[in-house]
Length: 193
Picture 1 (cartoon, one colour):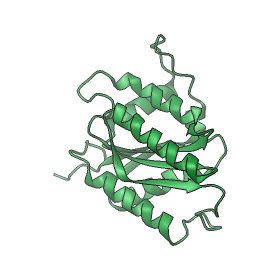
Picture 2 (tube, helix red, strand yellow):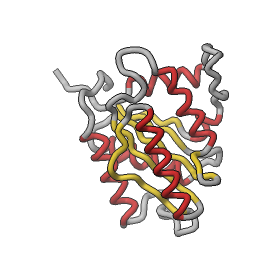
Picture 3 (tube, one colour):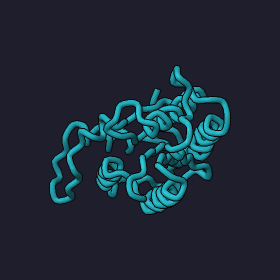
């Protein structure tokens, strides 16, 4: 019998196509795929289409249901956010708030799952504050933030080459480290192939 592939879900990005935060989350997912994982991405376009989370309204759109069910099945996650005014973007926070639907069941919220975190912001102070905040959110959801977090100052040079690949160097190395950390913390993969 073939072992199930680990299933990793990516969440993040902006309303701008090919944003740095979206591309970095996708890069981490691609690195997990090279290590044998199956992945699913909920990028900026998908999460921008989600209605505001309203706990008093239990009905969910197909997009909301798809996100919640993918995270329910996930063995690990990668969450990326741009930084706006020292905080997680409203777009990403709304997607995370929807995970309140995981409060019941056999595996509550992100219980015991590794979560890689990616932040892009217009300054190093914002990067650090937002990465710390995102770690706190993941802890509140019972997840395990990976030791490696990726923070990119958008005022520095882009970490991407003209063809879309990551430039050789620290960022590309951190993407690989984060992917390995997410995969190494997985306890029991689900039956995704």
